[in-house]
Amino acid sequence: MVKRKYLTAVLTGFMALSLALTGCSSKSGSSEESQKPKTVTKQKEQPLAKKDGNSLTIAIKDNLVSMDPQDTNDTLSGSVQATMYEGLVGFDKDMKMVPVLAESYEASDDAKVFTFKLKQGIKFHDGTPFNAEAVKVNIDRVANPDNKLKRYSMFALVDKTEAVDEYTFRVTLKEPFGAMLNNFAHPAARIISPEALKKYGKEVSKHPVGTGPFKFAEWDPSDHLTVEKNPDYWEKDLPKVDSIKFKPVPENGARVAMLQTGEADFIYPVPTEQVEAINGKDGIVVENKPSIVARYMTMNATKKPFNDVKVRQAINYAINKEAFLKVVYRGFGSEMDSIIPAGLQFYAKQKTYQYDLEKAKKLLKEAGYEKGFTTTIWGANNSDAMKAMEFLQQQLGQVGIKVDVVPMEAGTLTDKIWSVQDAKDAGVELYYGGWSSSTGDADWGIRPLLAGDSIPPKSYNVGYYQNEKADQLINAALQTADPEKRQAAYADVQKMIWDDAPWAPLIVEDTIAGKKNYLEGVYLLPDGSLSAKEAEIKR
Image (cartoon, rainbow, N blue to C red; front, top):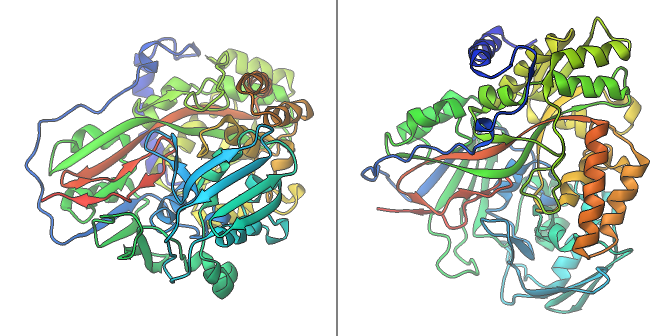
């Protein structure tokens, strides 16, 4: 069990809120007010805060896991990697695909062959030339199942790679895959120096060498990771700061204090309960925007009682998502109404599980659990995750489900959830987590989390959910590049899985970041990732 002081605060907030929410005693629908986007109050312009030097400190909420983009499954590590690595294509601040290391790209009509013309004259940080052979080495590496890399599933369909000439790279797939360009824009397709791969092997995760605006300087896993300016960066006039230190600070209050005192120049996320208190003071500016970051609770469908759809549906009815949004996120977000966020391509809205304790109890009784049962929920050990899990603990307790909350640090979660080699050895029952569909496409919001062949360690289906008909629809959506056919398949699979309830989908959070007002060019994308490439200190 977690410390009681956190739970007391959550329950106090929930009880106060429940008096204000319509029908919260046993039933409610989402009010129109709850679905209106909340924005940070705009404050009067402040004088520029004082800043010494030309280096930045960015405070983040979790520990970093790996600096190998092909073997990383967390957005935070990917954000730090983005300062050092680049892909052939990427996304701008609105998640629109743009060329990066590629000059241009094209796909065949049958969505099987993808050709990239590469920019010339670029070198990796170790002096190795960037060319088609370097790209081939990287894609061959991640597409090789023997390497057991976490991002293998994104490139499992690769049949052949070719360095057509020094600056032309071509990849041919085993079958059509309509979302492949989006996969190349994902952080997993960032390019590592081939010489660094030879030198370090798997230890490249601790020795990143890319083409990006910053070079790796040092990493103390218990305290910080620092990158320094790449003086030979290929893009003119960048970077504009000398170095960036990324410092994990899991405790919300400590992270905010760093921004207030100037120890940090940028923090994310900003705890929702402190947004209005710090915005416009001490030279601080807080910004929030809609995201495509989903928050949900998975249920291990291979274990009793979660193998019963009535139990899974009961849990969905037992959670007041409107209250969850207001208590845990202070209204900065929106309730989920599908298995993917509304900002993803091919999203289809579903009929929500409205908060209904009586219906939840009825379903539990029909499933043979009238008196409830005991279970365990796992999740991260940061303040936000703990608050969320304790809220879920309280909610499920109302229908007789006793939940033990077990927060874990990032490395432990990786070992216990993502690295399990056999489903029968999976200890997870409930898991509170989030997913950022960083390709912008429905495919990456559904397939790695809910396809039958995506269970760990191959991918991220930690609910061990399997539905053959759903798998057929997922595959059908990828067999064509026709958007209308893809839309139809994804609409069907979203409804099917929503009704089957392998998760309790909760909310789509806003991105919320705080910065000193002298800082420009650092921002969060809709997938929750950070861009610091254009960071600049205004004097």
